[in-house]
Image (cartoon, rainbow, N blue to C red; front, side, top):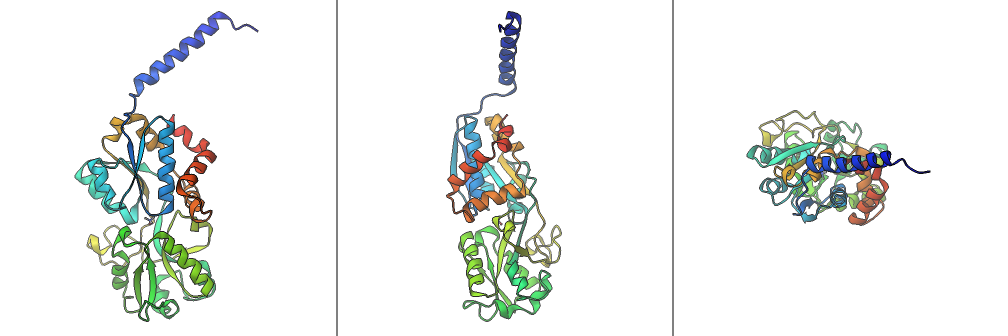
Length: 315
Ligand code: TMO
């Protein structure tokens, strides 16, 4: 069958005007690399490569830098780093807001996933009744003897994450809650050390309390966060409060250098639309921490398996 000539001409004409329109609506992105930070927990690193892959699919250049997860907000402010894609309220909210107030950092939106970063126990600690009354924090007044370790001086041990995440938040909280004579904080050298401790404690049948967060691969694994007195704005000692509070049920935001929307309008538009759920972020972590994939391979797999999720953001 022959296409009538008039119809063919119309199709050609509308293609041309569509090109012209998108050309007008969007100046081309700069060829300067978009600088994406990597930190020291799995979902963040996998998501860095997921976002980098998305930007590259749009023709952008990308560079990755390993960065401190607190100092990065100042680096975004000064333009050395372009974005942060996992701004966790409890741990980084203050650094992010401080940098934003100074000027140079913009809020690029909030993920659908909500967050919690808190001390907790694997479910079997509760099932074996190693601290009767958990997850209520007041149970900690009576059970420290089941959580001692060779390095804890007879006190129960909280295994915190790396100190670079949120400094002395947990030691200060133990003091504030009147638990410091029974409990002590040790800092893990890496996120992996937390997962190693969970496996070791299970094997040895001993109690363990570790720092953990959601979204994470442990969402699927059976982990219970301790319920501390509710977080309110200003309750932390560093914010002038009495410190008798747990972590917020918080937001997960995206941040960007304020010039990014101008230098890379298409990439910025995609970054603004980008929005992950608890399940998606848990998957990114699980590909590394459960399936033992390399971060880059995990990101490539995630991108290949989820084109229906991210490709619409690039349009
Ligand atoms: C910043 N973190 C998600 C490890 O709590």
